[in-house]
Length: 254
Image: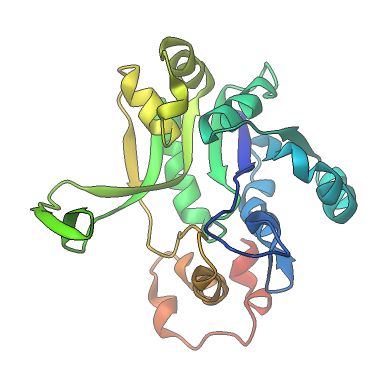
């Protein structure tokens, strides 16, 4: 079983979230901070040997006061991010222990994972060296300039990328080293694509949604209740009577 480090990215500006009280990763969802929901599935995997949380330097004091003790109990390493996502991930990558062979990168604001998607992703990444979660585009896609539709884009072969994205550590590091301006990459897979290494994809679900605005929170709260059913092998659980609370369903912890 190959050992994995997981980098949870929580260093964004949260400008579109528009909340004067909370940075997006720290907003409570079902009475628990969003970033803690995002680490839950990783922390009980036997092959995950290190969890790294990347936060903004200006959040250090607030994070330490509210979550420092819990992060310490969970054994999470906390590092500072950079000005861009790529810089934040690189700071996390620098903190990965030398003996760990694989790195998974995940958004702190994307809490709705299932064990099944993770297992499929981890298996494929360990076979190929680079794999991500994603979903095929199902809506009609328009190209727009200054509020005017200029083109309808064929959705054939188009997928929406998600996280986690998992790579052999040496492949991700080489992608950073070989890219003149890695800050332009919008995700880690793009860096690896630029380096010439193929990236494979595992189909997940629209439930694996990233919180970007306030309107996303209600969706996430509901999705977290449905996830235990999605993790059942047949997926027939979606048609079964759901328990009154997700923590009452034993499958949630499997």
